[in-house]
Image (cartoon, rainbow, N blue to C red; front, side):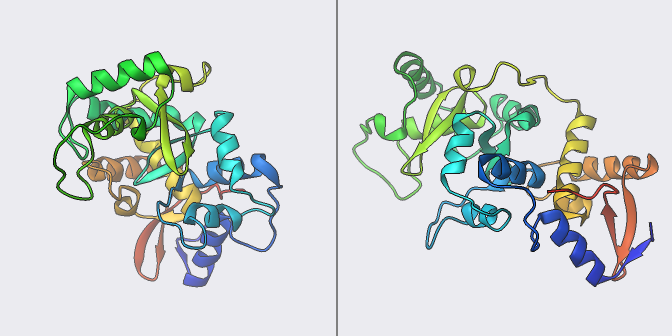
Length: 264
């Protein structure tokens, strides 16, 4: 492997790793959509729709015959799950255990958007346990005043907190609104739920990024991940020493390259 790459060759590698090229060889139907999501590591969910939401554009560009219904079916079949990557995203279900470090951090008290409201959380959990999957609209807002767009009602805040810390999962969306259910009723029985070691977690983040993007830096890999940049840098160095990553130069800038090119 050369120790440097031209911009043109780098662009080719990125396009190949991203699955954006003329030969759409991954097939058709839900299995192809799943393969695209798995190859990319995740697909960010777009909350804004003009022609169509951007996550559908992303998948349509990578396979022939894509349909927005594929996402709904993959969720129903428990092949993918919805959680936070650097933003809200669809992820392969077999990557579930690598969502646990973030979930445990929130469960231990790390703040996401709102302060903990244990009373509202207990009420929300009890209703879902008793009644089954529910949406935010199924909970009344008893407040007398509201202060603005992000001033969600207590039940909505509780739902999101329980979702972020892993007690609830999104079982589906109706009208693009989340439908929440208990984790134990959504998660397949055969999914590994063991907490990854720090090394395993960081290696996962690195490999997912580089397989999808071909090249990158520790700073890019740790984008919007709180407090992990130095650990990612150290892990990258170790993986280079082990031959699992290659250090290269592109236009006089240092990058990391995964020797195994992503295959769609």
